[in-house]
Length: 430
Image (tube, rainbow, N blue to C red; front, side, top):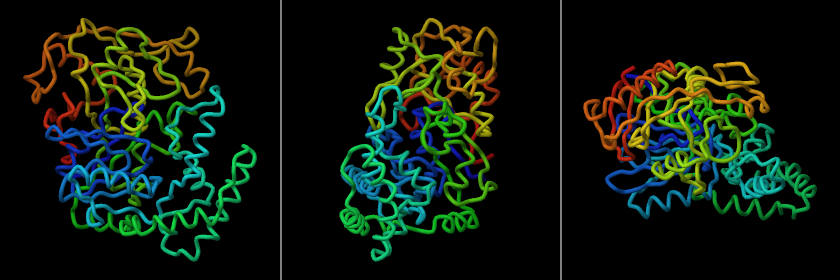
């Protein structure tokens, strides 16, 4: 028995939602440990589609405990709205099934406003955020001025904490020429939302410690992808948190020894949303085909994703920075029908061949992919549930990727449906 960490091995949107939901059948507890409601997951279960942005993907499964850890930044209104949407689909998620860490920082309206002001200020400085306040909320956390969930317990102490927060934010707003935030209005808003979210509050570190002692299986669910990690990603075009697997420990309150197996979700090609470098991006008909067949639109924003061939250099680097034991390869079926398929196996940088993705922004923009080509397949892989159902050329492609990234395939996904999955190695039996 093992506890499993699920991370995206590319720029997100690799299909983590389905894999986490599929794995959660074996898990007792599913934990979100970083990010906010900027990361969307789509689950297709029995023909019904569920779109989640903040809640752990296991929340649609009855009898499972879902946890939001302290590494997440929580928009309380977004939480209430998402719970209401699920309720309308017949999924009731009460406090007995969802627990939120008491020390989780809150996303406030002023964070969303600041995020949008920055993104809209200049095209040259645009990062490509979702304008949901994630970055500014993390800034306040690190600046030791955040309002945390536990702060809502004591309304009498809120005004002083809000004043401290607004000393920083109203100074920024004056500089931007926008109206300052009224302290009492913010306090009133927090007091109004408190009864709706406080019933979910818990000492998550203690809850998870007890679960481990009781022999429960824990599934840690990351958001975004490792290439958006604030330290190890394509900086500055990254998210505002650590998305690599090791942050599962700090973002939920367990020790690193609790992380037994790391599963990296990996798309059979590459996509990216927003700004930033993308060495294998295709702006031709092939890229358009990948986007159309793969339905590559953001769950949260609806933005079209940029598409390109599989980049083995990037995924191999992620395998190392995340300590990935095995990958879950998704969307293989999107490649059905191609005469040939290309894979990036290295880069050219200023005339030299390199086998890594550089950290410097200018070098990232200058790298040129080195491609190798493999024969495609005409038969469909969609819905395959065993290796025998796959065309020989598709199997060859999967094996080739394993060699290039130096990591085995543990799970193979062949459609958005939960059961269209080939299990090679069960991560919970590591």
